[in-house]
Every structure is written in C-alpha cells, then in structure tokens.
Amino acid sequence: MVPFGQAKIRPSVLACPPMICQPLFVNFLSLIEAKRDGKALACDDIRLFVTAYVRGEIPDYQVAALLMAIYFRGLNAEETRVLTLAMRNSGDVLKFPEDPRPIVDKHSTGGIGDKVSLPLAPLLACLGFRVPMISGRGLGITGGTLDKIESIPGFSTQLTRERLIAQVQEIGVAMGGQTPTMVPADRLLYALRDVTATVPSIPLITASILSKKLAEDISALVLDVKFGSAAFMQRRGQAHELAINMTKIANESGVKTRAMITDMNAPLGRAAGNWLEVKESIECLENRGPEDLRELVIDSAAHLLVLTNRARDLAAARQQASDMLASGAPRRKWDELLVAQGADINAFNEKLRRERIANMVVEVRSDRDGFVSRCDARMAGELVRDLGGGRLTKDSVIDFDVGIDGIKPIGSQVKCGDVLCRVHVRTLEQADDAMNRMQVAFEISREPVQRPPLVVEVL
Ligand code: URA
Image (cartoon, rainbow, N blue to C red; front, top):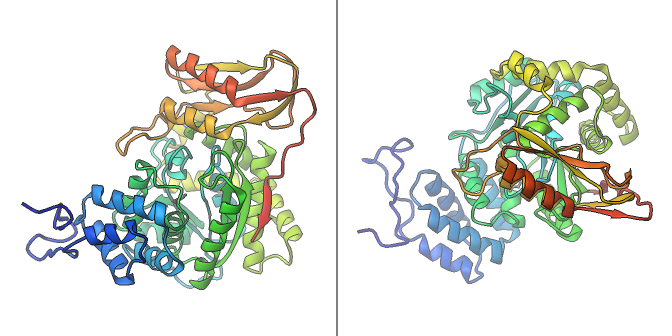
C-alpha cells in the first residue's frame, strides 16, 4: 500500500506509459507541511508539483490541501512567478507566424454579468489585431466565457494548437479553453479551486490568469480586475494589489499590460446567466445594449490600441473602437467566428429570436416608488448558480438557459409595480425561490441615486 503523501497515485497512462513513468515526488506531504507552516517553497519543487499533478501523480485531495495552505499563507513574488511560468509551460506555448497584426488579449478576474470578452474579441479582430483568446469556465459564483459560448449550439471550445493558430491567422480571432495540451495545469487546478473554496487568492488568481495569457504569444494585454460584493477581491485595495501583481509579472515577461480596476457590486449589463449573456453580447455587437457593458468593451479595446501604438491617446482610441463597433463589422466577424468553430448558425439565430429558452420567466417588481440604489451582484450570482447556471461540484452539469435579465441599473427611477428584473427558471419551486431572493437583492431609495463609476483606476 502507498502511504498518504508518497505519490505514484493515479499514474497517467495517456501522458506517460507506466513502464517509464517514475513518480516525480517521493513525498508531496512535505510540501503541504512547508506551506502550512508558512515557509517559502523551492522553485524546483513548484515546477515538479505542476508537472507531477498534470501527469496524474498527485491525488486531488493533496493538491486541495496545498491550495488551501497557499490560500492562507500566500506565495511570495518569486513563488508566484515560478508557479505562473510552470503552469504556462505545462502544455503547448503558441508561436504565431510573423505578421503586422499585433497579438493581444483581455482577461477579467470574474464577475456577474461580465460578458465583455464576447463582443470584445470580434471587435479587436476588426481593429486589426490577432486574438487567440483562451478563457476559463465559471469559477465560484462568477460566470466563465467558456460556459457562455458553449450555450451556442455546436460551438466547440476544445481547439488544438494547430487549429487555433490557423483560425487566428485566417479570421483574426479564436475563443477556446484550456485543454489536455493547452495550459493543462490551469485546467486541473481551476476546476479544483472552484470546488474547494480556494479561488480568492492573489497568487492563485495571478498564476491562473497569466499562465493562460502568457501561453498565447501576445504582445499586449488588458486586465479587468474587479472589486466588490461579487468579486473575488471584495475590497478595492485587494483588487489594486492583485492588479499590481499581475501587471508586474506580465510586463516582466515581455507583455505590455494594463489593468483596469472596476466595480463589481452590481451585475454588469442587464443579464446574468450563460445564454442570456450571449444574447446581450449580440445587442452590444449591434451597437445597442447596456451602456456599462459598452463602456468596458470600448475601454478594453482602447487600452490595447494605445499599448500597441495604434492610437495616439485614449480619447482617439475610444473613438476608433466605437466607430468600428458602429460599423457592423464586429457583428459579421462574430458570425465568422461561430462558423469557424463549428456552431450551427441557423440554430443560433433561431435561439436568438426566442424570448426565453427556460420553461418560465418570472418578474420581480418594486414594492414602492423610488430609485434603484442596490442590486446585489453576489445574491444575483448565487441565484444563477443555484438555478443550475453554475457549478457546486466538479461534475455539475450547467443549465445554460436559466438566469436573470432586464436588471434595472443603479440610479433607475421606478414606480411601485415596475419590473426590477426577470428570472428564467425551470420549475415553479425555483420561481418562488428566485422571486424572494431577488426582491431582497434590490434596494429602492426615496432619494435619487447616482450610478457609481465603473472604472475606478487604471494601472
Ligand atoms: N479567471 C481565471 O482565469 N482564473 C482565476 O483564478 C480567476 C479568474
């Protein structure tokens, strides 16, 4: 029998035939103990840990324990950098052919209703960039780009390196996920963190996001670092620290990087839930839709235009991005992207035309006259997750079509009886629960309320 902590558990037959597969760790337990006791891990041990975990040589329960120790004890700057690069190097690192179009990307630390990547990716391709966007699934209560785009009938997110490069070269954009060969370490750790309450950790978020982005051969990156009730960093100061950490490692790795610190106390846009967010992204691509979503899409594109010297300043860059959005080209690029990744465009358009996909829609109404002063993004995110739109375990199956839409933004004037939001549900039981929970999520004040600024700082 193999004692706890002395690996050679679950040897990965696919990655490495048993005949030649030697365990990399003889005693992983000592690593957990070291971090539990607040000691720094040796660089080589971090690299070995990542390799061994990807090869299936360390059981999830031990890695979960290490993640929890990291959550409480943290990683220093060097440990974080080494973990990031080890995770990036756990799979293929892209190398694109020489081309005048800069390779860029954007990533968010995660929020409720945060669908910015969906309209942004085709917009960037139309602005003359190449965008090999590797994203993640929902994490905690926050939605994930991969889950959202998988609500599109037939859309495939599991792209090989060759296919991803060829598609980006041809149409300027691809949207995929971690795979067994692209950043596999993040694929495994991401799923484990999601269900072990170890997501809100500055070094773990830094390594997760940057391992994906640094594997893309990009020259510029914009990060959306969120703070607030539904963000992993609840306080602005923590978001600032996370942004400093990420921009430092990314810039030192040769990627020109800027971070926007943005408010995540209320949902972004008017919809939260996988398919409903795709629908809202189409509105944005058609130059309609919520103002806050549009602001973040335009700002993200503008920062990348400035970082790559394609615009003289932010004002000119914003104008360039909003003119491009208004031209309709990004909407057409979106369809091109769907076709390239195997989506059934007729089924997609048919789904888009339907008012709802879930069995029923319930309306949450204001019980007084006044102004919307709060719509708690955490409560909204927890509701979407509990309706089946997010995961409670690694094996949870996502219900793409449940969620919330028509969310009244902060500052809106409402009369008693006005609809504050609608919830798309499967069952009557869910309908009752959703009504009660969203009623509490909203607060209506007698006095007029200003919507707080969305982007509070740029680093
Ligand atoms: N997005 C990621 O890709 N990883 C995290 O840890 C958080 C948000």
